[in-house]
Length: 620
Image (cartoon, rainbow, N blue to C red; front, side, top):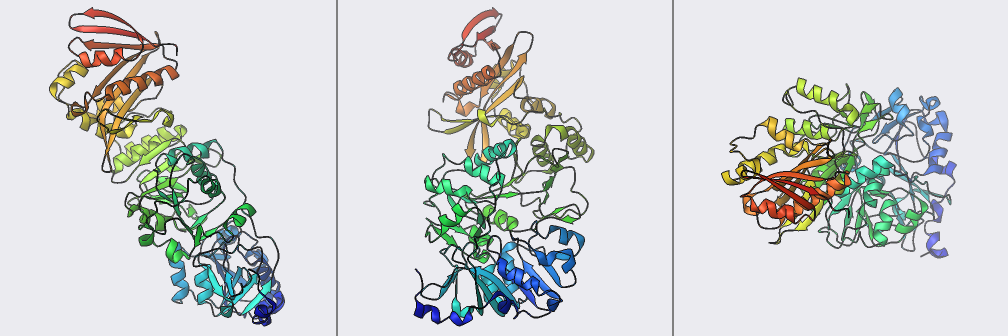
């Protein structure tokens, strides 16, 4: 609602020119600049235009989208910038030593301002014009801007009718603003990155970890957008995040994101700021579905944890074989910042049913370097400790590190690394005694997510059929040791009392083409339990694969064996295999019945107590 002439007259005297506004900035002061796409560009340009009049002036802010002329080389004797998060526009200044970097959790930055640890003399912000009640909205950037404006000795606002009026704890009264400058320029926009093949694969793997009713935190970029694109068939998702971009709009409009099952502020998208296109800014304008708040609230791990099924999605620069995460530097060179990664990882970890996910391509520098590394580069900072990491996702699969030994971690991370670097990583892990000396070299294949399938057993259990991973060895051994002697004899045709590492790893370390192992699993609380196994090994000379399966004793007779065999047959047919062969004891009637239900043409021959079966797959 526009203000009337009489309402405007109450604050008209505060409107001045850019030159008059920035004239109030004094030498030696610390000046805060508004964040992201809400950077007050006119005020920044006006301040820098004063040049040597402002010698020894300090500038502080998070990442901003606009220009940062105060960080230019020719301004080194005038301004000193302190990056609370390093953006592209100040990265070279920090690298050359002309600007500083303060490593700090995003949730704690407002406290630095409020407690005077980082005293602010002036806050330059951008807001909406005052409404008829005298309130200006911080719009698309509440984040640390609200705390800065409430802590600074002087507030200078660039009021812009193009700024969306956002709901939430997102307002400042005109009485709290000392000077105002009018601006009618379009807001800065962040480009929408294209989703390439790598990002799409990462998005699909990450989306598979997200259940219906989850509440999400995500960042900006091609990978977060790819994850969102893969959530179109989910239901009742919520959002509690530090920021978001255009990728969320389609999910809201389709009803996928509705916040219906959120346990904190249900029916609301809670965020600190947003950056994106004009479409996004128009979408959040005066939209009560969005609740913009300070990062004191959005990024507080204890607040985050109040959202059940909280899922955090963050990125990394590199991860070592034990799970240490570098996210703010490339070796000694500071690149970005701590931001909200640790805030949300720890909040999600404490959430009921929560998960934290780190997503990253397997390589950097156009494939010339692995992001999963033997050890972090000298100077690289550990943003997220190995004890905080839960899931890591690349385009080659998912590594679950939570509660795992360093041996299990190294194996899981190598399994999702780029195939070109696996041999070197494996050698390093063996040399450091992270892996046993007889650990198999992994095949070059990516985990085939497309072959995962869920079904209900005859007694109503929710069963997941999925390809095995090298990290399934311990769970597989647990399942095999739980079998009675008769089940072991029926499957292996021998009385086997031990399943050593050498044998067990062979069963799960498959290439998903010539060798395959499918697992039937059920979740027991947060632990995945293997209840059935089916595998094949291809004979290339005949293009037939030798197949076998076994179901845990307590799960037998519930249709699990049949589903395993049908899925194994589907995989084999997709891989161009002609059919299965199998040796089955005549007393193993259950296995015979499963093979007979496969729909294949079966030829039987007999030798003593053994059936020799040959099954030719149907063409359809």
